[in-house]
Length: 136
Image (tube, rainbow, N blue to C red):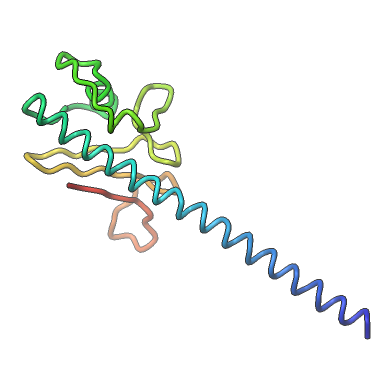
């Protein structure tokens, strides 16, 4: 009887550990999504501030925009809100998973896109797409 009880107890503990591990992984994923959203909000604010100082949003690649927000362009405007963004060795602004974000700027609209946890750019119509977006 004690062996059966110990076996059942051991199985329950194993299930609890697996469930706890899944919960931990989900919480870590959620924390990174929150971090992306916070970083993207800072970038949107920074891009708006840049536009207010210079009259236009920065243009070009991720690296060009990163440099412009860091005061490394002809405008020489340093945007503190964008300075907190994570960057890779090239200087590109990256999401919490290390993938360079994409910037889409058109008129007065800005969209910031992350490839998400799987680090693969996917069509948003795909049911399994985990890409993330923030816009002003």
